[in-house]
Amino acid sequence: MFTIRVYGILINEKKQVLVSDEFIRGSYYTKFPGGGLEFGEGTRDCLKREFMEEMSLNVEIGDHIYTTDFFQLSAFNPVDQIVSIYYFAKAMEEIKAPLRTKPFDFDEQQLRVYEEKNETETFRFVDWQDFSSASVTLPIDKVVADLVKSL
Image (cartoon, rainbow, N blue to C red; front, side, top):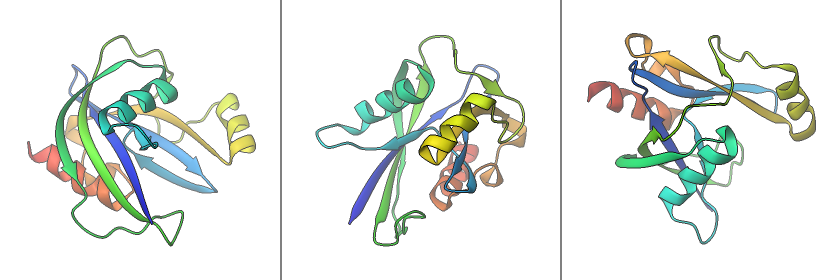
């Protein structure tokens, strides 16, 4: 079984990279914003939807950066192979979602969401000089972080 995921690399005017800190099923992950492709949806539409759902943020989807070119087993379902697609994204409005300065700095509402859904997330920017593959958790994200940093 294949799972297709679509992620956005959003770099602001201060040259900071947006990341999502997530608490999923008892484990912590830092990854790029995005999510799963739904049936009948294009990859760019998926990413626009994910930014709207997760951050109430209208984005413009830019150039394609990378598509997984190696085997990656899902961290959450050992019978799924993950294929991830990455694009640059640009905020078309001011970000209204709460932004944190520390990793995994969840507020009370986000912790209540975790109790209901067994997952929650928050967002923060990482300064360009501090951004690297060590800034993210998942193997494919690490490849993309190195690629973006080299551009």
